[in-house]
Structures are given as C-alpha cells and as structure tokens.
Length: 375
Image 1 (cartoon, rainbow, N blue to C red):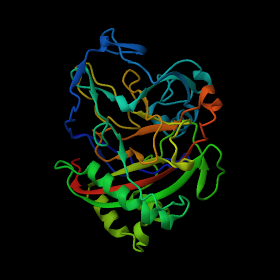
Image 2 (cartoon, helix red, strand yellow; image 1 turned 135 degrees about the vertical axis):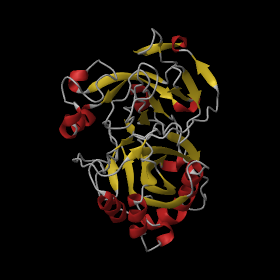
Image 3 (cartoon, one colour; image 1 turned 90 degrees about the vertical axis):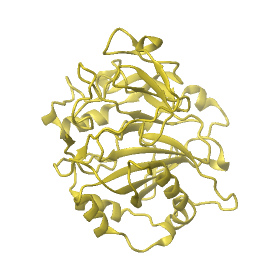
C-alpha cells in the first residue's frame, strides 16, 4: 500500500521540508448522500474536462471571481522545486484558470456549498454529495450558544469555557465512525480573530486575501508538530495539562491524526457574514487512463486537477454556523488539503449599508485517533 511521505506545519509563513511521517492511501468508500450521478456533458461552465469533451461546471454562486494564487505558487516553487514546480512554467495552481496568471491571479467561478459538492468518481462521473468532513474535507455545522453570554473572542478563558466544549463535540461527532476508530485527543490551538478592519496583534489579524493552506506537513518532525500545538494551545475549561507524550507516542506508533480548522462569523449584533466570505478549494487529484487513482494522491506530490477542483463558499453564514475544513489527514485517500482565502467583496456588497466588514474567529484542532494507518 502506497504512502505519501510528507509531514510538517505551515502557519501563515513559508517553511522548508523534511521527510518524516507517512500518509496512507487506503480506500474508504464515500457515502453518496444525494445519490445524483451526472455525466460530464450535463454541465456548462469554464472548466474543460480531461475525459471526453464534457464541461464540468454548473450554476455558479458568483462568476469570474478574482483569486490570488501568487503566494501559494511562490511557496511551492521555493520548497518543492524538486517535485518539478516553479514560478513560471509549472506553477502548482497554474492550470486553475488562465487569465491574469502572470500576476498570480485567476478569475474563477465559485459555487454554493449549500447546494452540494461535485466529486469525481472512479467511473468518470460526477457525484453530487452533501459536504461532510471525512468525505469532501469540509462541512457546515451548527452550535447553539447561550444568548445570555457575550463571548469576548480574544479571551482564551471565555472561548475555552463557552465555545470549545461544544466545538469538540461536533468535531468528534463528524469524525467518529466504525471505520475511523475512536478519537483519543482533540487539542485546540492557534485561536485568532480576523477582520477587514482588524490590525495584526497576538490575538487578531487582518483577513487573508491570498490563497494559502494553514498546514504543510513537510516542515517539522513529530516533536515539532506537538511543540507548535502545545505552544499555541487553548485549553477547554482551563485544563492545565497538555498530553504531550501521549500524542507523540500515538503518532510514532502510526496512529491516524488530522488537523481541522473551525471558522465562524462573529459579526456585530450576530448579523450574518455578508462580505469577504471564506472561499474553499478542496483539492481533487488526477486519475490514470484507467480511471484508477494515481498513487500519492495528496499535497504536495500531485497538483489539484483543475477539471474537478472547484471553489466553494457558504454565503451569509449565521452566528450559529461553524465551518469545519481539514488542513491535513494522515489517510491520503481522504480530501484534506483545503486551500482557502477571503473572497474579495463585490462593489454591490461594499455599497450596501447593512453589509458590515467581516469579522470571524478561527481555531485549529489536532485530532488523534486510536487506529493505525496502514503503510
């Protein structure tokens, strides 16, 4: 069984690589919730299919959105040139849109994830699925908050008391199944308030307008990963101890682990997020000529297949909605490297009096399972 041998951490900065930990590409069947199978010719839009002459795009939420790939392509050229990527002829994300490529920008359609996720099956058909964390790499969840409590999202104690217990519950529920085994640890780290009108401090940051991925597991060994999580840890209900040695031992023993980003709007007066929405690019990778997934179907070994890797958004997220999306999973067969960025507001959104500048809160979770990933 093939493995993808990359591990490390990238947290808003570009870092180097080492070969440390393996991902497995063991197959897990996806639950096709909506059970809708469409031929490629059923779609119309900007992305040309690589099999047949069908075109795969459906009704977009917004068309020709300017998306900036410059930072991601520069990172790949700097740290994965040995895999053939550069910043001119073979950009990692170069084939996802052509216009403005010299400036690192592409104009792409963005799709409403509330309507489903289009995934390519091994039969060459598109399957419309309801997004779920282990199946598509992201999902929308709901948390009902105590309306009598006004959380200060820059206060770790308040977040750890009023938000993280509920967040741990929904992450555990989303990732717990018979095939996954039991979850032994959910450790939260790197909490951050972001906004269009927010300055950079230890607790706050401007929105990220360039495409990026939070976690690149090619930069640190096991101790480095755990060190970063522990250093930036946020504790549930002020728990003092961090299970450092237990987590290190589990990862060394080949146990599965995943990194999940939890993102939510924290608008004034609990209004909906009405601009600068978070856009997601769940990478789907190429198949060989027999429609069999190629080995190492994971970042950074393969480039996302531009025929099937679409951008998605959950527009107008309410204050009780939480977007979960993966940044890494040791099981290489699962979609987990979700590139993302803030989508630029339209002129219409800017001119709307009730469209307040976006404010959001995100925190990452290191999730450790008790089952071993086969090599």
